[in-house]
Amino acid sequence: MEKFKQGEIKSFLDYKADLYENENFIENDPVSIPHLFSKKEDIEISAFITSTISWGLRKTILNNAKKIVDMMDLSPFDFVQNHTKSDLIPLSKFVHRTFNGNDLIFFIKSLKNIYLNHGGLENLFKPNNLNENMGEVIHQMKKTFFSISHQGRTKKHISDPMKGSAAKRLNMFLRWMVRSKKKKVDFELWKSISPSQLSCPLDIHSGRVARKLKILKRSQNDFKATKELDLNLKKFNPIDPVKYDFALFGLGVFENF
Image (cartoon, rainbow, N blue to C red; front, side, top):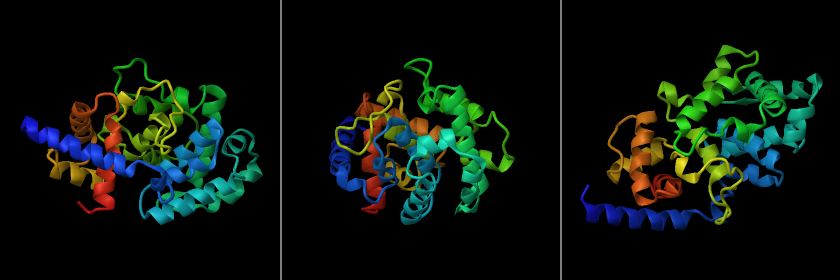
């Protein structure tokens, strides 16, 4: 890519990122669910579960994520910590595409184990150093998440970059938790991860736009493609490369770029 061309692309993406990253973005996006809460643990638990079911129609995602937090009495952390066996029974009827009630009940039990025995969700995602790739962190997190008794089928709901996945939903969740709250979309809740370590959530829309702009060559939306895209976005903004998620997503979904 020629240097002047790269400069033009950077200016274009900066403009689009600023255009889409504002409070108007929240209402119809899954990030609206954790915005219902103010307590750290409520935000991160609702965000984690919402991001897990964030595939398919956005309206359905929002409806089903809202159903989950309603079933948790709008107190996710209290529910995770103090639920009884009978509290879990209504959850067994939940369905979002291939994520069912059994999956949801396991997630609640695993989250309880994480807060009880592993220092909470933030601690589970904490990198060993500033250079550690979040793909490796997610891989280790998955091991802990499934360290209690579980059905084999539930494992597919947590992606593993070390097995080639782009882990789009987990990278979106990490963006919510880590990036600056200045524009009031993301939360800047976790200080143990630097925004520079985040990966761009790569899906069919952002991948299409990135290829059109020639900042992604790889044809599959996998972990290798995520790393390639990250590398190019860091050339535009090494401190906060994932701000461009707003540009790529907005261009793909709202503008059909």
